[in-house]
Structures are given as C-alpha cells and as structure tokens.
Image 1 (tube, rainbow, N blue to C red):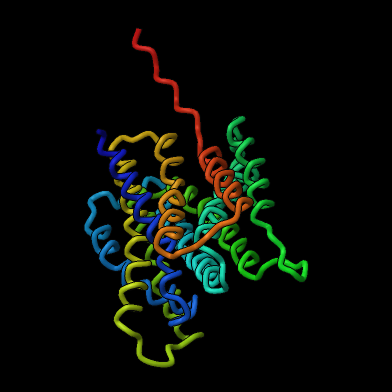
Image 2: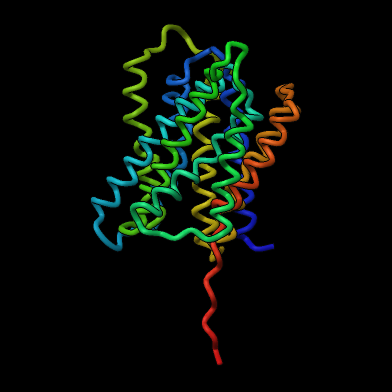
Length: 291
C-alpha cells in the first residue's frame, strides 16, 4: 500500500476526530476559549515543522508568509464559529458535513480571481452542495433559521477564503513553510481571544485534555496531508480523500455521542459528502508519451 495513501488516511482520521471533540467539551468553556486553549495542541506540530529542511521559498517569501498567516487567522475565526454552532445545539453528525462544503467558496474564488476553470464534475459538486444546504436548512417552529445553522455558514465562508490564500501562498513558499506560518497565526489569535474572553475560573483536567486534543488532531491532519503530497501522491486523488473526514465524524457522533438524525438529514449528509468529493476532484495530468 502506498505511503501517501496511508498518510492521507491519517489526515482523514485526525480531522474526523477533531470535528467532534468540541461537542464533548460542552459548556465548560466558550467557543472562543476552546479555540484559544487548543493552541497548546498545535505547538508540538509547529516544533516538528520548524525543524524541517524544506522551509524554502521559490518566490516572494514575505508575501507567501503573509498570505499563509492570514489564512491561519481566518481559519481560527471559522473554528470559533464552528465550535459555537455545536455549543448552540447543532449535532456534530449534521454540522460537520455541512461545514465541509467550504471548498465551494475556495473554488468560486479561484475561478473569479485566479481564472481557474471548473470541470464538469466540480460544476455538479456546486449544484449538489446547494442541494445539501437546502436539506440542512431546517426551520425552527417559529419559521426562522436555527441559530446553530447560521453560525455553521460562517466557517464555510472563512475556511473557503483561507483555502484560497493557502493556495496563493504556495506559489511563493514551500508547503512546509506555508503550514508553519499558517499554524503560527493561531498563537497571537489565542492571546486576543483570551483577552476578549478571559478564563473566569480553574479549568478541569478533562477540559484541558479535550482542548489540547482539538489543536493536536487539527494540526496533525494538516501535517499528514503535507507528508502525503511529499511522497509523490497525486493531488487529484489526495484532495478528495482528505475532504471525506465527515465519514469518520458522523459515525463517531452517532455511536458515541448518542446523536440521532432524521431521514432528511441523512440524505443531506450523503449529498454533502458526494459534493465535497466532486468539488475537490481534478483530472489527473496526462503523462507525457515516451515513444
């Protein structure tokens, strides 16, 4: 079995676990505090990246670092909204696949600003993502949107913009250096979040373990994906595989969190997973003929 495939599976598993950990934290800390405290889990991965021999730049090093740093800051903000959506009562089994539609935003922005072209499969993915959003758009008894659903749309936008900035940053610096600057943004953001929402009292050991797990699994997923690309794995195969982390999160939420989903939500989850795969799909480059 190829090493790149095993590493991609590791990324899917890490992100799948990360996506449901916040639900276990509950109301012991706020969404902003969860994001800030989870930074402790990022530090081991940042140290490992800092020792890499591939922290290189092929273009404007400063521009690449700034774009990657901004991408990390936007991801932090998106994470806070994601955690808040779960804290407001959103089920992980539905919030995770819904927010996993963020590649839709990245692709639309790439078409608009980078003049990239969409293939037929990606166009079908856009249509399916809209269908999935409609299926998750369950109104409350008052006829208004559930609050968790409103906050679930925020990370779709922020993570989508972040994806575009990461893509742009790799035009100037290596993937390893981009990842290091991306994760580095989490440190000052954590300080700002704790200044705005200081910890009122002591934090239990269980909460510390959970928030550290948030940061660790999130950063390990990114690290594993970078290693997968470095092992000569094809982007057109790795990207859709890595985007299927809800396949891990949803069974965990149902089996261990006791969540139940309706028939409509089940269809929405399936459609969302199919659309994520389609949005990330790129036609493999044609190998040059040797004859």
